[in-house]
Length: 351
Image (cartoon, rainbow, N blue to C red; front, top):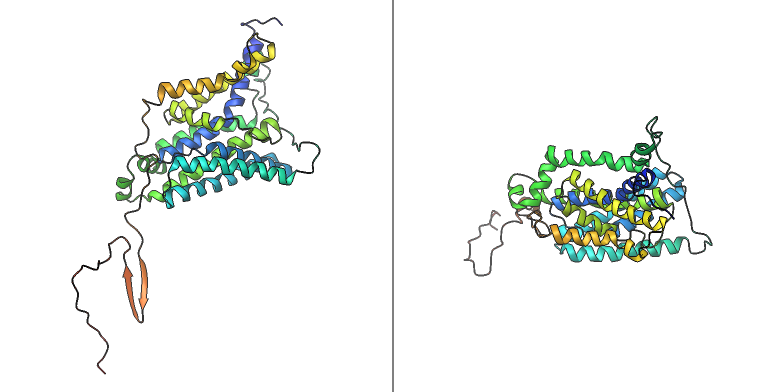
């Protein structure tokens, strides 16, 4: 088959596919950027994407509405993120170990649930995929119409969320608290910031966005759920966050770079380029290794990332003894057995 590098149809198809492939990675990377800015390293993002792919597919399959499926996936991702937060924030577990366990659990839960629900089905359950959003007049332009204005609505949503996340992180009090907690949680707590609450909120956003990315695969692109359909996109999102420097605009550009590499290798396979398919398929993952090798050592990670933080200002509780209210401060150490004896007086009347 003849191949012309200057073929506008070839390049417009590659660019359009790059946006489509980059969308689930962008969703996951934006959420992970928020979580890591708050000091939460979520290695379990791959498993949360798989869980979102299944829950989103089930929501769309049973309701018949694609957007209900996306909402279902986001809720499932938030629950998974809060569970991750409870284990790491409340119980003080290591983020990396918890993330590995989260991946195993979410993948196993998704696969077992799918087999349990559709074990008797002869055909693969499917739903109608999302149709591209038609932009009047712009879609009719030959090159730019196919490349930039023939996208699915979910792609436009990802593009719109990029400046929104930038504004939330850089121009709001919530974003300032997130960045402060990720750099110096002790100083943030001294300034009156509830460190645990901010971190729980950040990891919930990360889990919800990861699940939204997984639902994009099953609902918008494939119209079905398959085992291991995320294919390492969660780990690519982790690399994209580092490569993008935790900045939404740069993260979006990095996602387009990875999406373009994936789209290019798919297009080259389709036209029959004499290069082994296995080598072409490995291009995005090789690019991930190159990015990590080049930028991971010099990246300015949040100072408190993957660090357990114990509250200093713990709440007090009131304990009633008979008719007297006694306040116990949990933040103060209790008396030891070596403390000197203290004379106790009683207010009871003599017998």
